[in-house]
Length: 242
Image (cartoon, rainbow, N blue to C red):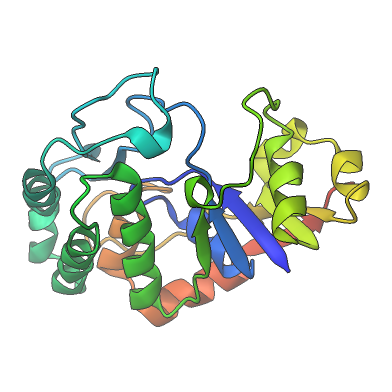
């Protein structure tokens, strides 16, 4: 079983979904310290004039003293309306604006009643993957009761979790390659691999193109079929010794 493990980000950039596309199962890594003003609670889309806009989810308890799974959204309905408002300018030019707005609504509708940021972010992954036609088999780390010690080093979480959930291969974004010791995986019978993802370049019909924005921007301009092809064609999985 090929496994990916990542923190729950808010409508993350397309490389996140390239990793989902290239693994069999996914663990939402929500048991470590929450980082305010990070990709966990915000992302970027195009500004109607130039540059980018932040789409963000205000929290009731934003603090480095909480774990990610303890983060609570201040007002889900207000966050939904704010997100949709930051996307409204796309309607003038983007061919899939209405469909993307429906994806956002589905994400917030699936967030449940706990006001949990993790629930919202996982629901956003569910909604995007369903729209794109990408299988997404995921488990929430805080629900697994794995008995993990709090003092694991940054590079120790992945091999430990991978071993406990029965992974045969662990795939990580290439940018994190310096974090890991291959032997920590080898000793558990797990193959370590890394995924590279080239910039997905697409037409924005007269607006400024900026790479690596939220998947929301990507979906505005591209059909699900085009995005699936890009996630396949622009990704490359390489062994740990490359």
